[in-house]
Length: 314
Length: 297
Image (cartoon, rainbow over all chains, first blue to last red; front, side, top):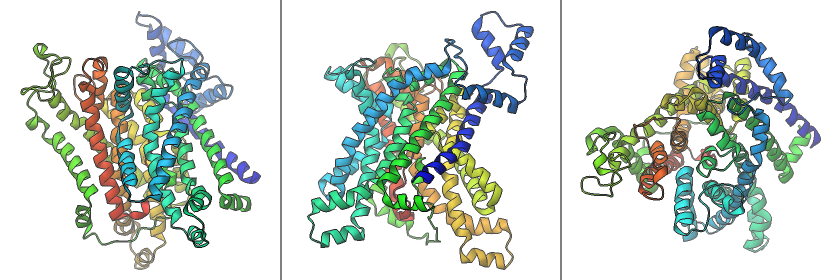
């Protein structure tokens, strides 16, 4: 187990370097001269050529690309991702400040998705082709096909405007957390229901399940003790991937609900062409995503003894 | 990293093409999916003929009107005919997704084939790039790329293609690797066939069936992602209609005239449902082993 973890972490080094290179290269996509852009933001008067030259020299923009990358990487390693054009705030601090709000929705909606999809998927697999199964499959199809930004407004119309139960948007109380989490959970639950169903169906067809049945175990015991655990492995992976995606900020849903997380922050930064923030955001979320995936992989090893043994051997 | 769920051991074997259409037509879900998709494609292609009004013609006399004979779905805040805008909106929505998927295919299949067939250093480098791109939440990266480039439909397309090709490259590489090991490729090599001929005549035909299934299954996700970027205002610019952009324009009228947001959302949902149903049915007919794979959400 330990050597496996060690190797897994060592493998992350090139990926993390790749992520940093990609995040840095993004700045090359932005049209125009960055020095000119900054000067234009700072004052309304058209910047003089001398001022542009001076700032270029100050920012080190005249250096060749690899050198600029290394300098940037050095700063990034010290936690310096530059400053926001808009607010002058250090980018890392701005992201760290908004990350908890994103994490709240991510965790709440992932748990909610699990609570909805697990029983539904299991029930659907056990009662295959029964009305329950059909209903849950239709739901899985429709739920996965609705755009989140539309579902968000449909829920607002129902629960905020119609029933007057929940606030339309904003942040602060538990009630504010409900609609964004439900919006994200419904979409996720659709995919997870489907995955749970198909994975459990596959396990139910395996020899060891048949053996358990032949031993005379009741169907509840067969499902709970034999089929569920192996059947859940793909579900755990999918959940982890989903959580990773959500921790990177649900840009659209956060924007709809004016939820002050990193997703809304990056969208606002895109509107204002605040490039250092976009760049820092990509690096930040890339690292978060990689770490979540690492945790899921370790969880995976812990759940599935077959991998544990193989990992120990390899 | 959703693509990693797909087994890399998919070994393609040539299968009879005859009967695919026949088997699809026996599948009720496939027919519903086909009808939904065909309807949307028809709307996109024939929008100028079908629409009763100019989709961008502003008419202050009929602002925010309810459904009527003249305007079956009513008018929007600028007095534009909603039905005409919906039909015209199918063009950028579907067109961008179709073009993006062609781009994705071109990059993904080429990259995957080279990686799998050539192997060695080239394979190593390409797969490292794939690893890095898979280490990102794809939509976030697409958003960042499109955001850096600035608003525009072409930029949305570039952003989507830049992140979406990796899954294809990985799968195609696996398929090509397994085809390489097969006897008919050995036989072709033995009789002196060129690399180009082996790739073109032997490797690619074996890769196509699973790739077609994947493209269809991915269309729904692509359309959702693209309309999401349009909703954020990164794609189609006013006054031109697009479903995601129409939803965005309807936001101020959510409470007074919710139908401005209901219709475009329904349109997106129906098309995506159509592609998902069609994709599922195609997978069952063409390549049941792809089951268990999921598209990034």
